[in-house]
Length: 82
Image 1 (cartoon, one colour):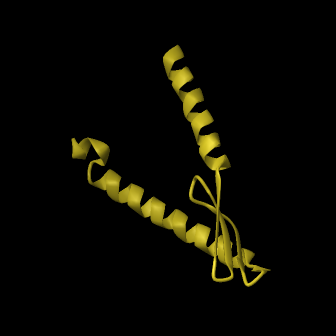
Image 2 (cartoon, rainbow, N blue to C red):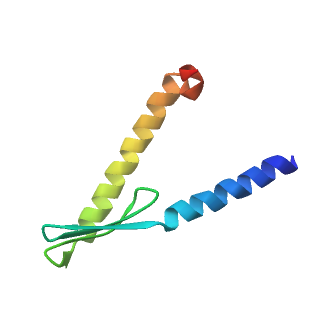
């Protein structure tokens, strides 16, 4: 039981560390900041921030991840690969 709690604490710590990583990308007047957990934190085009686009992209990414997780589950998950 203690080992499971310790593993959960380590997983939570790792998750937080990944989320805290921010990658900056800039090209052709577009600036993007993406967190380690693949969420867009900031996007600007020619110096104009676009929060609506950020929200839309993040919602689309979440739907894509949910669809992929469902497909994996339907196909037997990781156990089906072994």
